[in-house]
Image (tube, rainbow, N blue to C red):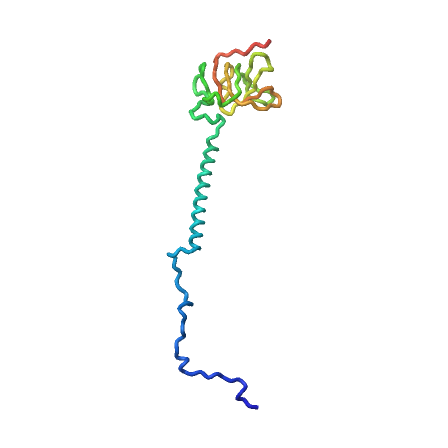
Length: 187
């Protein structure tokens, strides 16, 4: 067998080993130039602007909503003026307590104010001419009705459904008609 032709080894000239490798200028990585705005940068800018505008609108909406929630009161929308909900000193005929706006509350009644409700409905009652069937049972989220017991008053409020009382009202405004009131005489 002959060894010569089995695996020929290529011959390399020494001059080929000394040459430096040839580099193609098109295949070299260049540093990223951020000053140029390509399609990717425009998309990123648009998304950033959209995100900022959305955040501003959400913030304004949240502020507006919180303002509306904190502005609500049991006195209604037109309660811009300061009110006296509990008399601080003497009570006189003609004094008004609660909401300054009569139109805020649609229901009104006049009579003699007395302590006591009906089986847990109301803390007070307004006695009116015509007997027990005309009695209005009262509660108030605005003023202390105890201060007006024994007086003749006119009240404004909102009627609520009652289980036992014929008429149950949440008082929002009260005007003193007579500090020395008299309970109506039942017939």
